[in-house]
Amino acid sequence: MEKKKFVYLDNAATTPISSEVYRDMIEAYGKFYGNNSSIYQLGREADNALEEARAKIAKAIGANANEIYFTSGGTEADNWAIKGIARANKNKGNHIITSAIEHPAILESCKALEDEGFKVTYVPVDEYGVVKYAEIIKAMGPDTILISIMTANNEVGSLQPIRAIAELARANDVIFHTDAVQAVGAIDINVKDIKIDALSISSHKLYGPKGVGALYVRKGVKIDRIIDGGSQERGMRAGTINVPAAVGFGSAVERACANIDENNKYLKSLRRYFLKSVSEKIHNISLNGHPSQRLQGNVSISFEGAEGESVLMLLDRDGISVSTGSACAAGNLEPSHVLLAMGKDEDARSTIRFSFGLNNTKEDIDYTVNKLQKVVKKLRSISAVRIYKNKVEL
Ligand code: PLP
Image 1 (cartoon, rainbow, N blue to C red):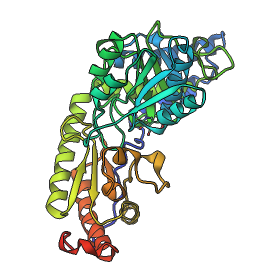
Image 2 (tube, rainbow, N blue to C red; image 1 turned 90 degrees about the vertical axis):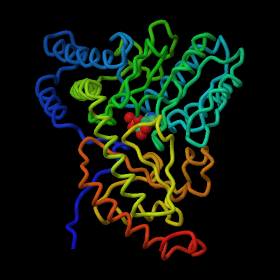
Image 3 (tube, rainbow, N blue to C red; image 1 turned 135 degrees about the vertical axis):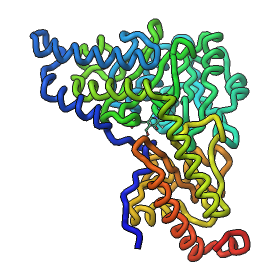
């Protein structure tokens, strides 16, 4: 019998902390316990470490350090961008454009603003999960103040045409925000070159610690604060920053952004290897997301006649961690809003997201595909959907 392995294939949900980041954080926990707002030496040292981390994050995306604000993660950065920018600019208009496939941190923030009287257009996507640019142009009006479109989708990995959207926004004096939580460290992003006005990042998607992230806000963009209290983060985001976590975040971003090409080459080779093996061993499957304009670590596959949650549970018994969509939808049996927006109604309940990371190997893939083949076969054979019999290999 094959020995049980542990294979983590949910790196889009979160990544393990890299050993270098871990080392940097341990050192920071020991050294920088002062409150970085305190003006004595211990505080100043913590503050210097925080500013060094800020500078690394700014450099990674081509921003200035004074345009980076630390947050508790991607969700807070998204909430702040949407609510803070809309509220600060409501004298100019009350219309926001976003897409149907955004993360709930964006969608729920937009919903909250609808309750405040803002109007939101949720632009559709094509069958590859790519936002329809023409629909954004159609939605633009004199009251449009903000466009928020993610850089890369977290469920199917499709990259969005943010350069064109940012150009359009700038030409029309509309603020452009992008949720780049899945993209920073995975693709090159230069906020000045792409004309991005605000951008959300999260540390735990790029081998850094959880509970820390950042919002880039271009100098001159009006944004209200949403967390009231002390004068931290230049008066824009109250609360004592977790300096060791920020140090780990800075270290993680620096490392990820310095090795994008090399990392992508590796992830692409894993992706190809996995797809070749899966398609040879399991039939009646379909791939979701854009074939080329995509994150290399993400593979979303629908297995006809095999229910996604059941595939997930059975793979878990074999020590393999995958997800049915995004981590935030885990435990929620509703079909993914992303797949539904892509018109994948039938497939939405039989989809698994495999997200590879730098720690994965070809042996992990061999083990996974071997188990997956058995799991899918078993589920198809007991599935009530016996009508598949003629179509599906049992
Ligand atoms: N935006 C996207 C695209 C994500 O994938 C996630 C996390 O899954 C978030 C936002 C939320 O980030 P965080 O987990 O840091 O709050």
